[in-house]
Length: 463
Image (cartoon, rainbow, N blue to C red; front, side):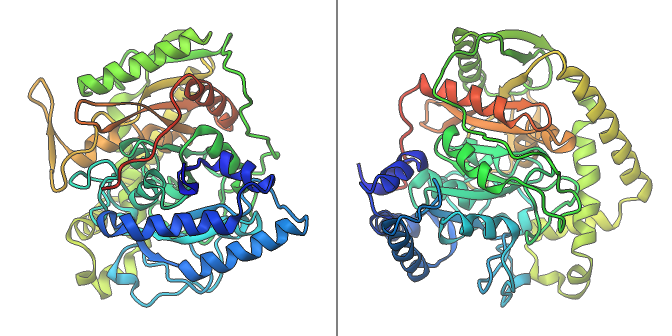
């Protein structure tokens, strides 16, 4: 096995015990970038010299006995919404041409302090306003969409061109591409990970979180990211937590909610079968399955769009009026639509969210987590605009991909996607676990227990 193939936790232990040098790992990852990046286009920019220099510094520190922890010497990719001092933050948009960040975002600074090595900035759907990331090919089939908006980070992790990545999630933008590329994605509780220095799409829905190859890896990254930052008005003052899930697979006593509505409606048959099989595996590990009714389902998509559209337009108000021609057509249409939305509709969406949070809190008192599909279908072909379901219903790809992930953004609850299978075309399928606010440890424990019963994760072919 080449160093670039190692999951974070395995590479970290090899570095800690000096069986692997950060220089060896960085060189292996950068060589992988050279081989597969021309096909994938996951990165906006690769900082190879910076990576190698930081790897040498990490190796020297570790040799001198100054090991900073499990992220020390580990190569990472950051979504190109996340500021790194002296580097461009383009949001994959011509609107940001020539932009350079003056300071590190909170998350970039925390990862740097933990000793992680920046490989580069990864593509997003322009300003994170979409679910496909059209610049980037799926790691399992480059003719398919990568998912979005954090498609570049998910593809980089799936293909071995980064050991872990960061994404942002406003309606599913970590979990959707993670599921479509067969990796782990975690959207933490709203406010747990600070967003200072991260370009916003919708301030009341935005989250920052890790994309990794294993659940254990996600726990290690989350530990470095979480914590209060007064520069983010939504930042929580939650106590420090050890998110590591432990080695056990016994889930006895864990109550897993299985939705009897919404999450299994208009879902591909292979996706449903794979996720239900994965849920049965949780039961075999001792979990008790409980039927649950998802509340207020008729209002979910209207609430998501009712919040996101006007908030996104407000953020872009100046540039939308001065340089509208620089936006991609799909994003410009959404931003212009936000200018036409009445204030009353936005306020009604706010009220709907308040009611939905209350109803979800009530539901989650009856179970410890909910298990469901992450997305209703695997990666569609690039350029495909709609999905037709068995009953003849036609749904846009964006609506389909956001439908099952957006409830966690509206309510702010944590959500973890774990790869569970591949369909007949070889495309990954993900299972989503949703929990109570600040219930990341429960999700990580369940996801890790499930992964321990499965074969070790493999990288995508990235051909």
